Length: 217
Image: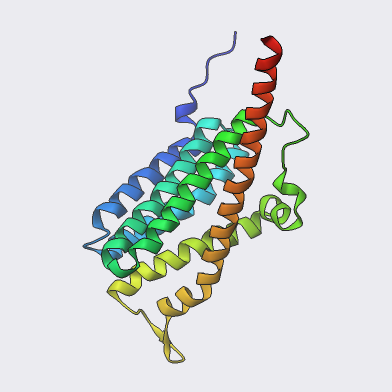
């Protein structure tokens, strides 16, 4: 009889707990000390790549770890956007819209994926689209999109406190904001595509269940 494993003490999950602690510290200082908040937020984000590597290296990938990772990412971005709402009140609607798209589309995509289980050929598979296939299968592309999205909001956050070092007549943080803005918009569009296709797939599940229920009656 094999000894039962404690997945809560797996190396990638311990790293995940560290990400959560750093994120909470960042939230606490987000409106008062941008240096502490920024470093904690950045380190927490960088650990996102390390815990994935640890999961593969130690063969300790778990559904709990994946969910912890996903929730930490989503909550981290949401709290940063909440701070931006207070810093830039005239743009609050757009930050709120970004939060709504991110949370709702990720949630319905994850929930629908669990429900569908790829049991029907009628399900729309986003990987059939060449752009989405590249997004899903190329880790470098996925990292670039996620990092660019975070860089846009992080640059807006830092610009509230400082312009940072200046190069060729433009500040570093402002340059990052301009360069990363298109990436943030594209990622939002991809999230909307996630949500749209998930709704279609969810309707297929509903129709299938209704048909099965009708047969029983």
